[in-house]
Image (cartoon, rainbow, N blue to C red; front, side, top):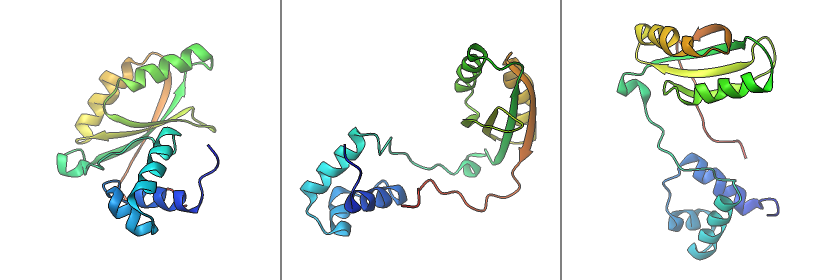
Length: 153
C-alpha cells in the first residue's frame, strides 16, 4: 500500500479519538460519501494501520486503581531467556503493557493492581515465578495526568 494520504490520515485521527464513529459519521467529517470511506477504512485495517478497535475501560471504577511501572533486569542476555521472559509475561493478566527497553533495565511493565496488597501478591507469587528475572524496580503512579492512545497526526 502506498503511504496514507491526507484523507486517510484524517480518518485515522478521527478513529483514534473515537473508534465508535460510524462510516456515515466519518464520511460527513471528511466530506466524502460513505462508500469510499468504507473502502478506505477497510484498506487501512487490511494494511495494519488500524490494529484493532477497543473500549478504554476505567480501571479505577473496577477497583484496579493502582498503576505500577515495573522495571525488569534479566539474569542473562540471550535470545532464549528473552523469549522465555516475554512468553511468561504474556500469561500475566495484571501486566497490560510490556516494552523491551534500552538503558539500565531490559523491560518496562505497566501493571494494574487493586491495591498494594494485590501488587505485593503479584510480585511474590507471579512475577517471582518468572525464572529469567534478575531484579525488579517498581514505581507507583500517584496521579495519571494524561493518557492518550491517539498518535498526533
